Amino acid sequence: MAAKSITDPVTTRHAAIPPIAKALLAQALAWIVVQATFGEPAPVALLIESLLAGGIGRLFGLERWWFPLNAGFTLLVAAGLMLAIDPLWYLAAFAILFVTYWSTFRTQVPLFLSNREAVDALATLLPTERPVRLLDIGCGTGTVMAGLAGRMQGDRLRGVEIAPVPFAIAWLRGRLSRGAFSVTRDDFWCENLADEDVVYAFLSPVPMGALWRKVRAEMRPGSLFVSNTFEVPGVAPDHVIPLGRSGRALLVWRL
Image 1 (cartoon, rainbow, N blue to C red):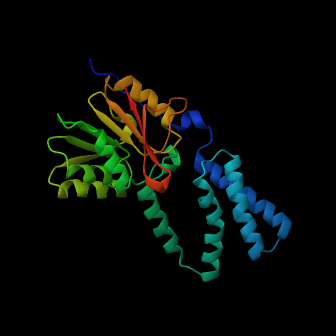
Image 2 (cartoon, rainbow, N blue to C red):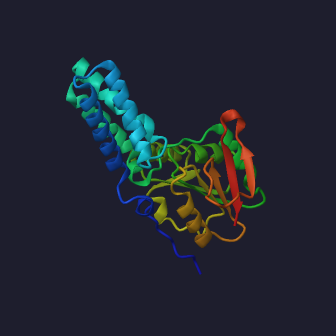
Image 3 (cartoon, rainbow, N blue to C red):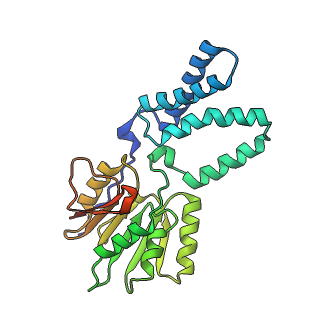
C-alpha cells in the first residue's frame, strides 16, 4: 500500500510572524533609530541604518541570507532617490524577483543551483544494473536532471519546482532533451515519495527536519535521500561526499 503523503507548511512551526513581516519591521525599527539619532540623512547614517536593519532581522530569527537583503534595501532606496530613478524600474525589478523566487518568503527556501561537482557526485550513487526513479525537489533550472540525462539510459528523472521562472527554464531544458527528464510546477510538499528510488534536495536548513519526517514516512526501505549541503537536525548521514573546495558536500541517507 502506498505511503500517505505528508504535507507540511514550514512556517507554521518556525514563527507566527512571516519572514517578510519581520524584514519590514526590522527596516522600520532601523529607520526610527537612525532618524532619532541623526535626523537628516547622511552617508554614515545610511550605512548605519542598513547594518541595523540586517542585524535586527537576525535578532528576529531571520536566516543569514536575509542579512544582505535587509542591509542592501536602505542603500538601494537611497541610491534610487538620489539618481531619480523612474518608479517603473522598481516595479519591473519587483516583478522579476517575484516570479523568480515566488514562495521564498513563505518557505525560506531560496534558489540554490547545483554545480557540476554535485551532479558528478550524485551520479556515482545511482545503481547501474537497473533503471532508477529520481526526483529532484526544488529543482530550480533543472541542472541536476540535465547533467544526469546524458549519462543515464532508461531511468526516470523528474523535477518539481514552484517558482515560475526557474520552472520555465527547467521545463524548456526538459523539452530540448527530447523527454530525457520531466519537470512539474508544484509544491514538493504535495509530492508522494513512495515510488522514488532517490530523492535529491538542495533547499535550506529551515525545512530539513520536516522533510526528513516526510522522507521517513513515504520512501521505501533501501531508497536514498540526498541533501546538498544542508543537514537533517539530529540525524547523522550514512555517507558524506565532499564537493571540492566549496565547503559543500552531498549528505546521503539510506532508508
